[in-house]
Length: 50
Image 1: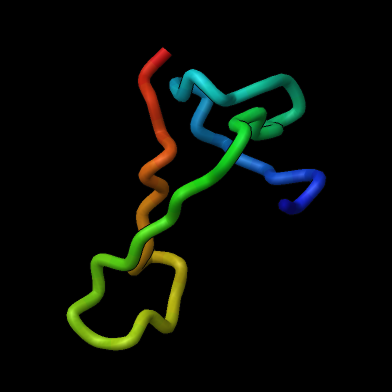
Image 2: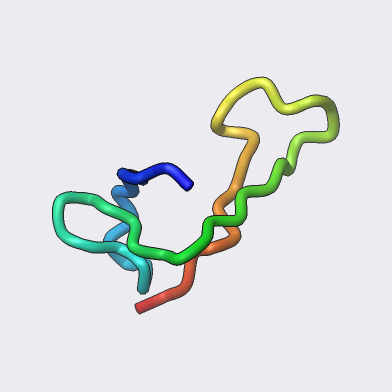
């Protein structure tokens, strides 16, 4: 897994100082009806409210 995963969603349980994600794994899905081609078409399913 990537060493430095950055995330600005500070309301997430996995958010750490300096916008780091401290989740042990990350799950990202596409919500596009076609092939995903930009980040706006994805969602982080790892998100959990603090």
